[in-house]
Image (cartoon, rainbow, N blue to C red; front, top):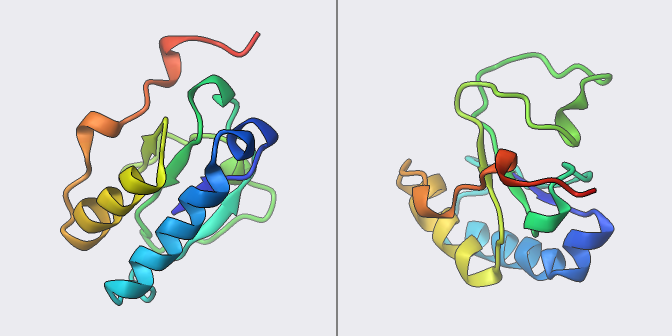
Length: 115
């Protein structure tokens, strides 16, 4: 799971979202099941704070891959937008713990642009 650390997302509260994710993963004992990262800007600043969840499929990590700052469209990839600490705790409880992505929190990256 990656929480954006771009300046717009940070201004919108992504640091608190990251802390909530870390605390929820720890409280539920899910650290071994879900690695938490701070990702770069995904380019959807107007929709932030942004969180991307990707299922580990055993794919070898390419150090030159844009996956840290771009949606890849991979199976198991979910993009959440407009995240808050409360929404993040819900994503951890439902998506990570119960394998039930929270559809109503999904971001729609084609809904606008940052220009």
